[in-house]
Image (cartoon, rainbow, N blue to C red):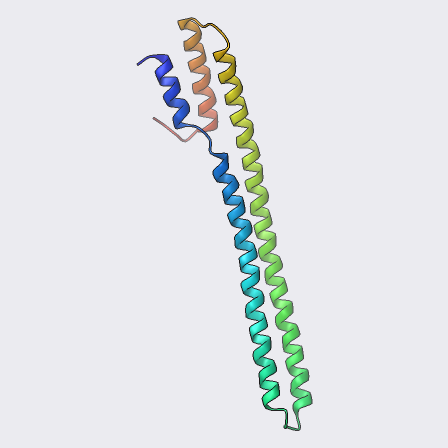
Length: 150
């Protein structure tokens, strides 16, 4: 197999897929919004159930005290939900930040690889030059993909 054959195969096997990372970021964002909607819906349902119970016992002398108790409980439930949602949003924001940093690093690596490829294709090279370039590409790919072996 010639150096040119090894090079093209190597490039095709190790091409970075930044579009997949970008779609992962969108998926995480959608998941966060969906979780927030579900939590709000569950809280609203509990509040409506409590209000229905208060309406059913409206004739009772202790309605005022029950309403106050339910109001306190509703406030407590809403405060808990807000804390949970804030924690989830914080975790998801950190994940998005980490993924964005990874995408940036991978994009820089792709740029370096493309620049190296352009440098090679613009020149007339000898077999010795091809071997030198091949070794440089192997070193670069080992740095980018240290755990991949062929």
